[in-house]
Length: 350
Ligand code: ADE
Ligand code: ZN
Image 1 (cartoon, rainbow, N blue to C red):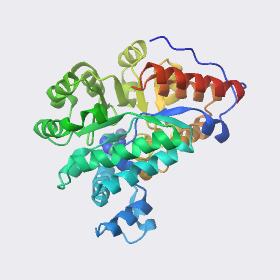
Image 2 (cartoon, rainbow, N blue to C red; image 1 turned 30 degrees about the vertical axis):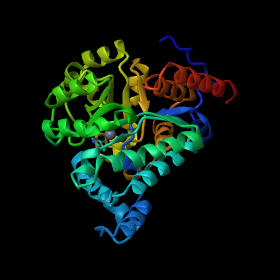
Image 3 (cartoon, rainbow, N blue to C red; image 1 turned 90 degrees about the horizontal axis):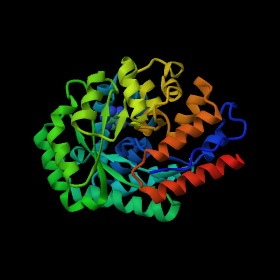
């Protein structure tokens, strides 16, 4: 597919400010819907569904979000998801996320959801699909945000459980564009899911996977080779291998990077150490995402802003990141052209 090149913004060397970043048309390709559950909505749903939370107040919840690594986050994250029970709950969760997107210049989303987190609690997969899909449709009509939904397999569970989930999802295949792989990375290499990814691809689904968030470069290599993924979620550990970085750059394999997540989960001590702009300058197709914004202190705009503040990200770099977010999406050629036109139109006036 040949796309219009990115236009240059005026004052390309200027550090990007909030107004510029907010107006920048962008997509979000790495967002866990369960990770957008704000404490306020969590309490509301707990009350609605008579679920007892291990916290008394919103402040209590926020002070528990003090993570030391990925697993320490996941332990809390799966507990919080227990308040999600009905189709209305999944609708409210998804709609709240889209509403936030609409005020941050996000024009297209490809969110993840983890059906096993819910089906393992006895919730029918249809409830999850219907609530999410209805909200995505409403978001498209109300905010003009296009979408493609991605079903993630939980990698700490078995291959058999992933196959079972794919089977349960079969009546809803037209609701999803692809499959992904998330949860505890270390000790759960991608090859564990080689066969279920093949089955999903044979059904016409696209494939992405978390790889190289905390895990070694071999997980990135095997996700590419054995799961045949089209995008790498996180992938920041590729900096450990010059050869792998070169390959990712040469093949223009997108990396859905999540800067604030990496700081909150202690992949890097501080944002000043984050390699995203170095990767961008080396020609890797990186972009900015929020991962689990309700847990990591901000949505996609906040992630862009943190890069401007900590790394002096310029308007030109921000525009390239937004362009990458659009050109790496699974939205189809026509929508992609429209979004790039919109981005270039914005840069001509901003
Ligand atoms: N599930 C939700 N957020 C995740 C992350 N950052 N890594 C792996 N699995 C996740
Ligand atoms: Zn993630």
